[in-house]
Image: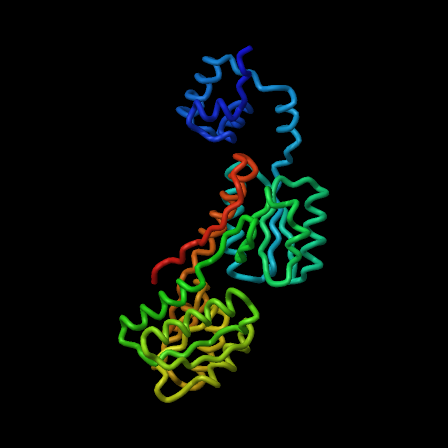
Length: 315
């Protein structure tokens, strides 16, 4: 007996993904006409008829994605979420937005709620101390944002590359005396990785590091700038734009217009308020788009979880 073809077989013969075949079968008007014609030709040629069980399974999809952010007031996360929403809405999905406030217990609570609701997939802005073992059953429909974990799908920012790009830009401008305002190294990404990138760059170029670490607040940037400032300082590189705004405010009060302040994150308020400042675009929105597409590949195409580094933008 001849083997009955599946949607995967039709996708392979048509040179498209399984989700595209599903959209053709469901009469999705957003499918490219040429693609639709190619898929329909293969379907007609092989007399393909989707099974009732497959149609039933497809009808159970709510086409809803859960997005768990750590802070609703985070500019970087909001930029990433904007990219996610544009991607999901364009593919016919709605989204549920939840906030964890960096609480592992709150994350567990949110994931349980989303699982009970039967969402198609979840994007989680991850942080330290999460219970990854408890999240293991969700690996096929979960993407971690800003943290990687073996066995889980993830999209991370290029923390090291961003710091090195700023430092290289300053060297090109003849700026040698560069101090660093960072975050406690207990924070893996904004803290440890960005600070270590600064230290490694100093070592490679024979410079003495001059750094101070605090938290992510404006007040911390203001205080650290006061600690680090010397008569020979030419630039302050900050681990985030929030720190940079605090540092720039301090320099403004001191009348130090000779010092360049650089942040990471492309917050428009930094360069709008302070003329002698620059900000590297981390590509947060593009990273959000990558995460959304990665999740759709998993839930629609059955692709395996993978770890991705989202590139930052050049200065």
